[in-house]
Length: 405
Ligand SMILES: *Cc1c(COP(=O)(O)O)cnc(C)c1O
Image (cartoon, rainbow, N blue to C red; front, side, top):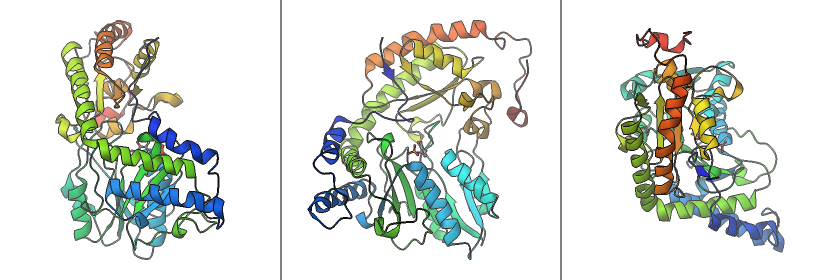
C-alpha cells in the first residue's frame, strides 16, 4: 500500500544525515561528556559543536543554548522557572488561548498556585489583537508567552512586534518556537526574545531531545536538580547522540531553509487550491493569507463530517494526516484552537490538518486530491448532519456548546 505521510507537525522522519552523524555516539564514542578522561573528551567537543549549530540557526551565542529532553520540557522550564524566579516582582502571566498544551496546562497549573493568567483571545482567522496584548500588561506581569507558529493552523504570530511590546514594558518574553524553527527564519535577537523552545523530532532529529535559548542574564529557577550540566541550567547526563542529531538537523535546516520553504509551500498551495476547488462545503482554518501561515501547514474543515472518521478512511488509503480535534481520548470536545477561533462546532469536529515535509512529492498531492473527494462524499451521505433541515448557523456564543441534532 502507498504510504503518504502528511503529519509532519506531529513528528518527522529522522533525516539520513542526522542518523549517520548520531551512530558513532552509540558505539565507540560512548563517553559521558562531563568526564575528564579520554572517553569524555571524545564527546564533549561534539556536544559543543551541536550547541554552535543550534545557535547559528536562531542567531544567538552558543552559551545561551541549553539542551533538554523535548519541547514540552522547555515550555515548562521557561514558564515555571520564571514564575518562581520572579515571584517577588509579580504573579501575572500573559499567554494566548491557542498555545500548545505544554504551555496551557503549565499556566493552568500555576493558576492553582496563586498566579494570575490572561489567555488572549484570537479572531476568526486565529490572529491576536496586539492592542489587547499591550492592554493586558500590568505592573505585576512577569511573563509574556506567545508561540511563534501554531501547530494546528500554521498561523504565524507577529513575534517581532510582540518583542517590541515586551521590551517597551520590560516584560520577559518566552516563545514556543517548536513549529517555526527549521520552517521559517527565526532570529531570537532581532525579535527581542528572552527564551525560545525547540524540539528535535519536529525538524528531522530524533524524539527525546530539545533545546532552549535562554538570553544571557535571564534568571530562571531550575526544576531538574542534580548535576551541574548545562551551566547549572539543567541537570542530567547529556543525550549525546540526540544532541548531535539536533545539531546536524539545525545545520541542514539553515542550509536548506529557503529552498525547502519554496518547495513545500508550492505543494501545500497546490493541495489547498485543489481541495477548495474540488470539494464543496469546505472551510479553511487559519489565516486566509498563506504568507501568514507556515509554508507546510493546511487545516481545513469538511462540513458535516467527523474528522476522526475521515482520518480512518485516509488511513485505509495510506494517507497519514491529523485531526485538529483532540478526540483521541474519546472526548467530544473539539480542539481548543478551533474553539478559540469560534469555528462552528460541527465544522470544528471535521477539522483536518495536512502538514507536509520536504519528503512529499507532487504525486503525493495528486493522490490525495484524487482520493479525498469520494471519501468526503461517502462520509457525508452517512452523516446525520448532512441535509439536515435546520440550517441556521451557530453564533459565536453557541459555538462551544455541542449541538445535538
Ligand atoms: C510538538 C510541540 C511541542 C512539544 O514538543 P515535544 O518535543 O513533543 O515535547 C510544543 N509546542 C508545539 C507548538 C509543538 O508543536
